[in-house]
Structures are given as structure tokens and as C-alpha cells.
Length: 93
Image (cartoon, rainbow, N blue to C red; front, side):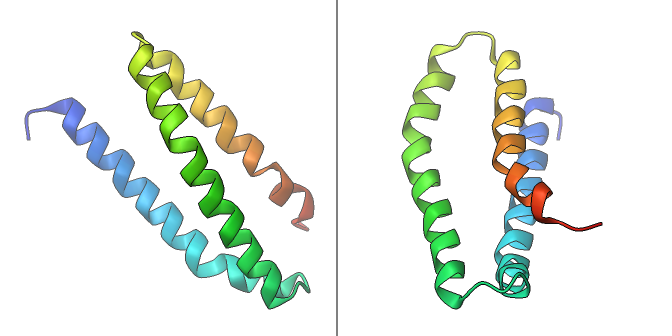
């Protein structure tokens, strides 16, 4: 595979699939362990699906308009870290 950009995209997609697979597998167990109801598990998944659906088109338009795509990597990383901040506060070490 000589196309480095294609390989980078495939590796990023593979990492995203593994991450989402772990989320789908272990999040219900984590939510139940925190004492929340089954309805809360459904609410978490519905919220994630809604946020994903609503953000795809605006994010795609933004990515198409920005010429220097290297600046979008920190933006995406920042949004992911902010979305996970609620989990950091609730995890006990």
C-alpha cells in the first residue's frame, strides 16, 4: 500500500471502530454499575445517536470549506475531550 494518506485514513477508521465497539459493549455495564436504570442506558445511546446525526452534515461542510485540514485535527480532539469530561469526573481512582 503505497498511498500513505489512504493508509492513515484506514488506521483512523480502524481505531474509531474499535473505540466505538468498546463504547457499545461496556457503556451499559458502566451505567448500570453507577446505579442508573435501563432507561438511562437507552437515553445515553439515543443522545449519542442524535448528536452524531446532527453533527455529520455541519462537520462535513466545515471540512470541505477549510483548505488547511491540519487545523481540524486539534478541533476534533478538543471536542472529543470535552465530550468525555463528564466521565472523568465520575470515575473513582
